[in-house]
Length: 486
Ligand code: NAD
Image (cartoon, rainbow, N blue to C red; front, top):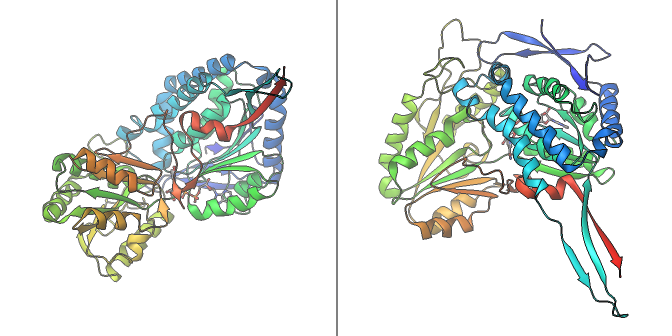
């Protein structure tokens, strides 16, 4: 039986309590292995190893030395591509075609891109006049923040974890990662890669377990953790903020969304259909940036609903290795129960189910898996829970609108503020509407087109702070001002 152990100070270690829990594959419910659950003892050992490593060879490495090491890590992930791919697809059930294009290559790229961006970023300098006429010079100097706790979700496990670990390490910090309890495999494997590349022990650590009263809570409340970066649900973010308030630790939060897609009648319909099919259904709808509310200008409303339904009817559910399948299962039966409860609620709230709405019969081999039908609803009121709450499944609600002002108001009528997508061939309108979106990200005529140099993060209840490019510097470093009197 495979065991997923913690990775502490360069070694794989079991929980002293021997407490484990099951890791099951969402494709067919099969048992993949047992995950060790960290207690306070293991979390303490990992945090102390990370603290000590700041003073060891890692702390003495130059920026160029760190960049070289992180480039090696990226290369080694790519050399072990198939192992990472296999591990990610077994944990999540997602198609190989997706993970081989997005999860693994982008997971590796996060080490390269951030090391290079951060190495080339200047700090500020000001000359100050003084009464004696001689003046002073101020120089900004960045130092690592220290031990960073990384709490990551299950939807893009390697990619979203390295999105934080890459810049954290590039800035000279050490990390303790708590991956999602649903998807331990690629984070565990990364420990081995760190050793192979010569990353000093204690720089990268992993502890497994759950959130409350488990590894997540023990880690975020550990007094030697200097800052916490989190991706996950908004309610979890609130719990972590409380933990971080003790000792005034810094936080970076990337949380949930209920993202609008706005389709104007002057859009390129082919592109808008293709883009919305991706934004609502890719990764079985388990993308924080995904579109769950679609607003379509009335003249093309009927044709848009018809065409999107036809697109959904073409989606093929199947095993990760199935070359024609483009949709896997949800991540777990627990998450399927949640998504399915929203499918039932939609009907209770008066939705017209345009397509889907249920649990498919996948045949004996797969029926123990977390499969669900991709679904489109119409006809719900704007205050329906299905229109207001994040579902995180392969589903969307479509509603017509009549004017630009109306759709801006509808799109912004949410507690969330992560991303919006606008489809129009009128460039001025696209920018005008984008400027009025209360979100951290807007795509015009595309979706999920990411440039790692740009800021990433959410407004309102979708997050706090910005990561990406040089923006992460604010979080991952301490900016010190050195004032030199001349
Ligand atoms: P989650 O909040 O349930 O869990 C995320 C992580 O937090 C897991 O590792 C979990 O064990 C840990 N955790 C839970 N409770 C904790 C606690 N009290 N203390 C410390 N750690 C705790 O989220 P999830 O279900 O894994 O992921 C889906 C959510 O993530 C969705 O809401 C989605 O929108 C969001 N998400 C956001 C982004 C973004 O960039 N904004 C990206 C991906 C996912």
